[in-house]
Image: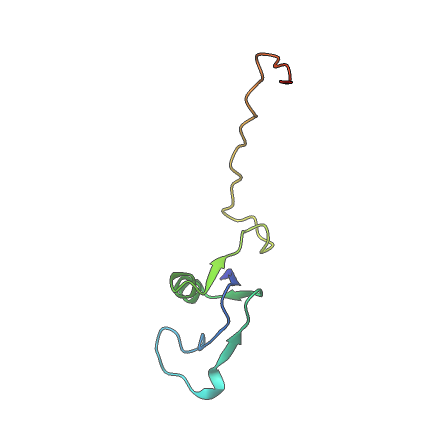
Length: 85
């Protein structure tokens, strides 16, 4: 399961994916700005179509597989610069 942040509102049929057999009762409305938990395959489809982005693992409440990138310190100032007049 993956958490997807919906960027464009749309309707979909996650229960029918990937079989393609859906009824009107299976329709789900996704609203922009919400975060939704969905199967990996359906999440990849939604992200691939540009309708959403994967939420960070930390935001999804799981640290599984999430590794923080090391931060680099700002470059040191080696010369004192006088303000120009």
